[in-house]
Length: 231
Image 1 (cartoon, rainbow, N blue to C red):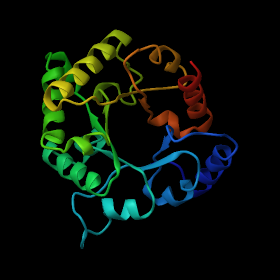
Image 2: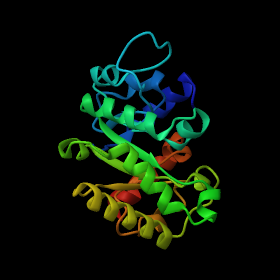
Image 3: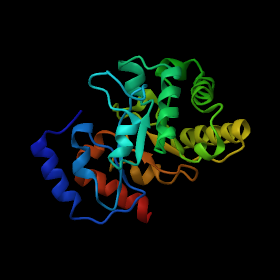
């Protein structure tokens, strides 16, 4: 929930100066989504409703997003789970509705500091992944990317070590392979910045990044993209 119309206009002028590809996904506030469509990059919505349609004032359905030629939906972001009390069941419902509309899904999972300190990280992540993905058709699983975002690292400047991230990503990939017999890409999100991206990008098994605050500054976001594409 950042940037005014004036700021978005300035942001887009900088975006239009660069060449991106479909591996770059911009997920602006829903109000600004139409202005990001029609470029070389992909566009995603930050959330979808847990309902197909109907009288749910202020909500946006997966089918509405798809009808606007939006490609991606972020589901289960920690802020949705935390501020709006979205349970694993709600996240699973939203994910299924998004997949039904053939949207690609970025499924966010992550543990709190308390869960981390109690050595429950893997238990929490497994529970979140199983609740969201169990019973999903293999063809639909191919449209899902997991974003591991340790809640304690989001917007705090605290970032797990590369080894910690690598171990957790390996756990997630192994778990999905065991549960569903498929390979799934995993992103890292949590205080990703233009200053630490060179270090983070050395992690061999991370398939990309979910960038939060740094993405609202286009010059910083461009630096991050450049590192990921060229390093």
